Image (cartoon, rainbow over all chains, first blue to last red; front, side, top):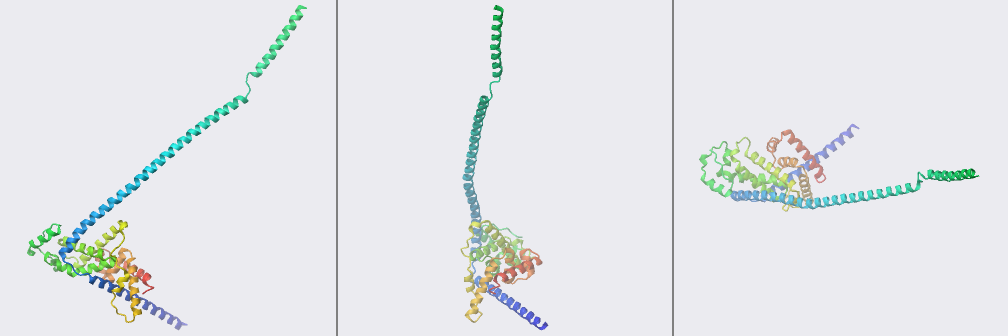
Length: 154
Length: 207
């Protein structure tokens, strides 16, 4: 049992060692390849190198500034119409809201008028019962008066 | 007495001839190398190393070449500030590391110009392998391994990649790497450990 475990351990160690050796070999090969490529680049005169580098640095700085300026311009060019469109859209929405509110107010007013009309028709004239009573009373009065006159004459 | 030269390179080289070497007061032998007469020698000696580091870090021949030139231009401009506190090689490598960092940062900002026209193809890179293994099968496996390592290194974060390249391509000591990158040794160790683990994980199938 202990022997088997030891054998497994040894196999595992050997596999790890083999893995590490392969890794080390791959890195060595990578290093060799990089060195080989770098060696292909021939040396250049220092004066030319430095002149080129200085010129390139200046042009690179200018290019970066131009790129950022262009990016800013492009941003503004995209944002301005978008902002205009947004503003127009907001204005249209506001106008639509106002129109809607106006319509609503008109509809409300119309409804109120209609309700007022209906209510005024449905409710009887407040003085009508009194008037009827008065007319009744008036006719009674005249009848009584006539009877009194007749009695006085007879 | 240290004279400050104008920045324009053409005028700079006219001045180079006018300034007598005796006017300079070199502190160390390496500092003396930096003086005008020997600057060509500095370039000749250290250019391959700087170029290799930048090439392995960027995987782009033209950019590596440009940054190498920038590195020597900066070194030349700042040569009077070199006091010999570290070796000339370390000082130049430090400049190269800073340039690399700036370049990567500016590339990040210029995300719309990411295409690398002169980027090295790992297929081409593996063609440069010295053919040590005898059989064609072994040779093919070796090429596949280099491609895998190259790709894995390219995917590493910038700091890990720098540390990995300095250690395994330039074979620098941890102390020197710490000096070049401005990190302390334990941080360098951590970056190296992580870089190795990542390369092993990504290229492990091949290696």
